[in-house]
Length: 303
Image 1 (cartoon, rainbow, N blue to C red):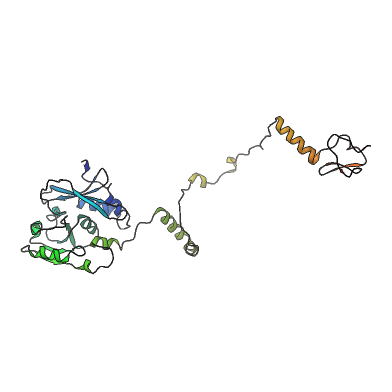
Image 2: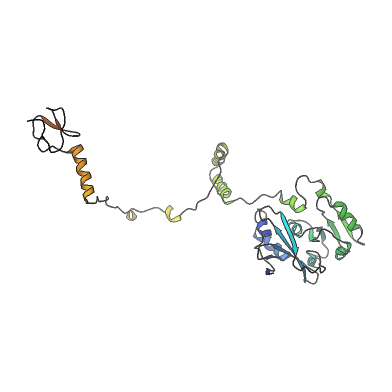
């Protein structure tokens, strides 16, 4: 499998970019704390690095880049080898800091981007054993179980000797579809506006009345077109080109058309236009003797 050890081109980082909170500085700091890679398909790889800064395994997560929903997971090494906790390499760098422990790597990575007094670690598996938690002995640990996993975590933690821990029940009291503390926190974060929404916000900043108009008429921005800067520049008189009027083609069809038009509206009957009993009307030569317009080229009044 061809992978990148560190890469921002993954569904995980694409998901985080949908929130205003995660700017470039926060994402770069996140990558520095936890090297996160990617597969050729854009799946995120959360590397588990031990205290000796060696990769023991990588948890490959398949997730929706828009909703954050996890569809599947697998391991980079599938030979059943033991692995350390996600973020275990940070324990030596922050020896006196309280450890926040969660189940999945995505939650630990997300929560590390918010101002908390913890260093965030994750077991990376649903069935955590007391042996998995031995590196935390002597540390002060706060555990944030996923919704519905409080009792399971309590049994596991009590089996670890000399471990000072506090078990949080914050997720047990959360209403709705949030199952992890990261989902709860992200549900309260404003999303990054789309290109259309950003354009509307700029217009509202320029003219607050636009917001009232949009609300009153229930309007929405359906597209944004770029402005051609050259088209917005003033045009000098010297740049204005005067073009001659279009020339009528001198062909037989056009001649016939013009002649017919001349006959109907402005033509003269060559035999009648000098007659005292005729005059030129709007539709040609009018014969006062016949009380009608006469055909072009014919004198049929009998005079």
